[in-house]
Length: 192
Image (cartoon, rainbow, N blue to C red; front, side, top):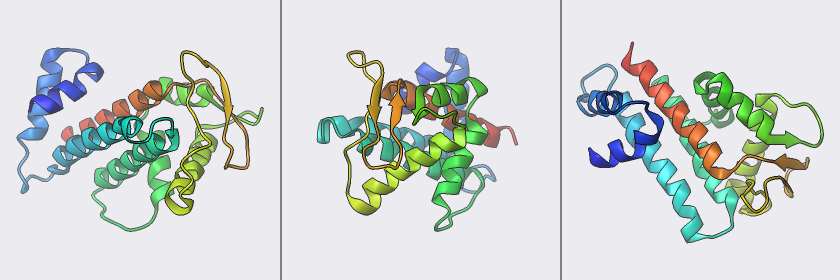
C-alpha cells in the first residue's frame, strides 16, 4: 500500500483522507460493484509513473510523456463507466478532462496552452493534444511539442499539428491536473 499512499499523498489534503482513499480502494474485492475504483487507482499511478519515466528513457521527447498522460485519461474514463470497449479514444480523453477536472484545472489548461493566437475552449486544447498523441501512436513522431520550463516559461511549439501552440504550462502542472482528475473519478465511484 505504501506506493499508492506515496503517489497520491501530494494530491489529498490530509493524511486521514489519504489513508481512507487508498484503504477504501484496496479493500475492494473483485465481486464488489465498484471494484473498478481499485483498478483505476492502480492504473492511474502506473501510467503517470510511466509518463514520468519517459524522461529517463528518451530525454527531451515530451510527446512520449504526453502520450502516457492521455492514455491514463482514456483508461480512467473507460473504467469509470465500466466499459471495456475498443475505439472512442478521443471521446474518452475529452470526457476525462471535461468531467473530472475542477474548473480551476480546466482554466489552467486553457490558459496554459494557447492555440495560434485564438480564443480556445478546453475541447479545442484537448483536440490539439490528442492530435499530438495520434502523431506519436500512428506516425512515430515523438518530437515537436514541449511543455514550458523554468528556463523557458513560454514557448512556441506544435510542429506536427496544424496550429502553433503557445505553451506556458509545465509538464508537472499538467501531470498534477491529470492526477487530481483521476482522484476525482475514483471518488465518484467510491461514493456511489
